[in-house]
Image (cartoon, rainbow, N blue to C red; front, top):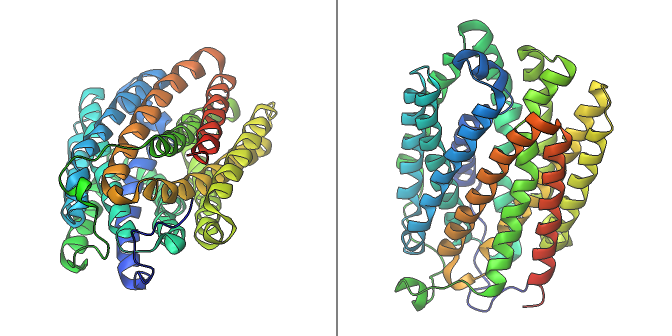
Length: 390
């Protein structure tokens, strides 16, 4: 994809302190979301439900991400900061509701959590994309998305310790306090200056319609998300059922996942702008697929199973983070709207993938979610390749 002429070539990089604050806030938001799948066995025991029931709740809750459909124009008008503050506030409230201690209060809390994380994430991507030139954007978005890895690398062990010391409610208290602090940090320290680049008139008037190329890129990114997360969501249950990994053991493994994801997202920040964003996204899909094959060959060997998940996460993290830059420039005259639609489509893909993954795992074991992931990876690659023709 070429750099559009609608954007000034002198748009610079974000200063480090601003990007660090944004990344720290997103790390808190992502921790509130990401600790749940690896620790599903803990929540199953707390609520007295099965893996299938919980993954169904998680999948249905993903529908809250459709809320980003209504904020596209707000993002293109420069209100990203307000959207991010609202998202973090929703995350804090969701953590309080989850303390109710039933599957029903958890369902409400998770729905609100998805709403908060989705809106904060899209707001952050739009804020960055409006201020950083496409030729350097993968670096800034890649750094921003290292928060996804820090959520496991730092947040995972913290959650394991909290659960072991004070029980399953402790992580929710931690997330409520942390998200509230993050909201105040964004509100009080993020620059309030408007976007460096302005959307085209069509976006400003609300008449924006995505082009075919934009739709292909959006769907490619969404199905890549399905390919990675449909397996990750049952990874904790698989490690517990297949290998007998305890809560403490899951904490250590999750920390390892975070370390390798940090390498992957850092790799996207360092390499994707230089070797090509499309090539990077496709390469990530190849590594993800290889990880699936390794998982299927584990045959009771924990080390092989963990290596397979690590390969899947590395490929997914590197490719998906890079795909976000592709989405941000799929329709440069309406970046905020495109990112908002992209998140909504991704919500449908992730939600359906999560629900199907839980049911397939209950029926076929790991081979069921792996087949779903492989099909989604093929769909993602097809969409990305086709998008280059338009």
